[in-house]
Amino acid sequence: MPVRHRRYGGTPQTALADYIEQNSRRWVEAWLDAVKTDGGTPRYHDIEDTAEFLRDAEALYNYLALWLRTAKWDPRIDPHYERIGRTRRETGFPLSEVIRAILLAKRHLWDGIVADCQLSTALELEASKAMGMFYDRAIYYTIVGYEEDAR
Image 1 (cartoon, rainbow, N blue to C red):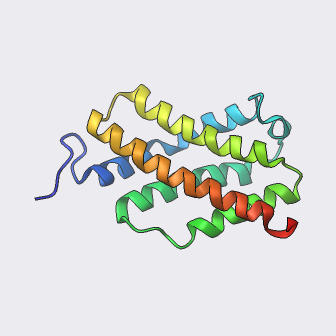
Image 2 (image 1 turned 60 degrees about the horizontal axis):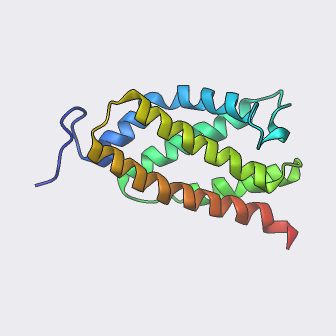
């Protein structure tokens, strides 16, 4: 018998996916504020047209939710991060700042989960594990894309 989450219903992974989808927009906006002011992302401070950056950040949360919901790695995820890596390199972003921006997205997701106190401890542990696996892979493919033409 599968485990069901008492507050959100469904499996813990599905409950977490629902929670991420319901809250992703505010986390994306918090992320944008952070990258535009964080000391580790100075190249991001002068971004005027934020549409692409907002889409990329929102896609990050949507892909994470999709992966949690389906338990399958969507074939669009790796190329998405390779494209981010390539695009940021082509537009002059240092790799360290690109990775810092991804880590800020992860932090805003985690801070949002913890601050809302909406999830059980078991679900927070599931979230931590899933986020670690997801963001490790996202970072790896971002670096692959960044280095693609530089080899």
